[in-house]
Amino acid sequence: MLRHPLHDGAELGQLEPWHAEQFAAAVSHAREHLAPWIPFAHSVTDVASAREHLRRLAVRHAEDSCHNYGIWQRGKLVGGVVFPAFDTATRTCELGVWLVPEAQGRGLVTAACRYVLDWAFDERGMVRVEWRTDPRNESSRAVARRLGMTHEGTMRSAYVLGGARQDSEVWSVLAEEWAAHR
Ligand SMILES: CC(C)(COP(=O)(O)OP(=O)(O)OC[C@H]1O[C@@H](n2cnc3c(N)ncnc32)[C@H](O)[C@@H]1OP(=O)(O)O)[C@@H](O)C(=O)NCCC(=O)NCCS
Image (tube, rainbow, N blue to C red; front, side, top):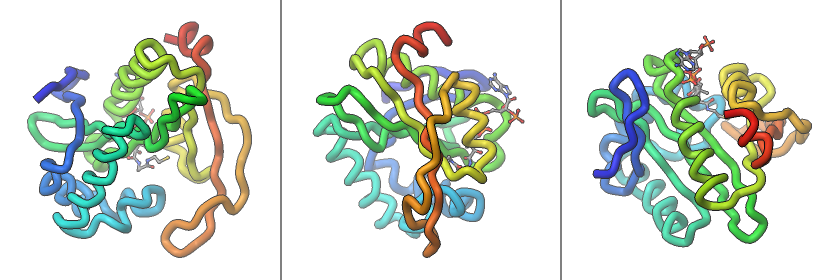
């Protein structure tokens, strides 16, 4: 498998349908931690729903409208980074992240984001990468800040998660800002 080394024995690689068992296990393990912020923590409940989730992203990967990566540490899936929207026509995309609780606090997601942001800007010609987060999600806001993103505004009552309507902050980094930041 093609993997890119991060640090602390962690590696970044494509997260694909054949990882369904590992993905289901990671989500089940981290459900309480992910559920306030991440839709798939509600929809991925077993190996079949994990496979279906990864299959849908893989189809969109083939269409170049979504790209999904896992972070493995010593062979165990501990998180991921995903471009849930990737639009080559407008040259804009969105980036999202998740980690199991015990993999937090080591900079793994920031390192993974740096690698895929280089790819999005340098290889794929993106001009704007967005980050959307619940205003209460301090860990997520800290990653956006660490990546040099700017908080552009807050969309009120923008989506439903866990049966409740949530606000969504929009952060972004532009190509020229990324070139100056890294
Ligand atoms: C959001 C989330 C991925 C952030 O995880 P994280 O571990 O804080 O982020 P990173 O992997 O980038 O690590 C940064 C932390 O590691 C520390 N760190 C240690 N070594 C580091 C290094 N080499 N580089 C950068 N940071 C490092 C940083 O100081 C920071 O810790 P701090 O927040 O206590 O200051 C995680 O909290 C999570 O999965 N939350 C639930 C899902 C979620 O909310 N996803 C986002 C939805 S918008």
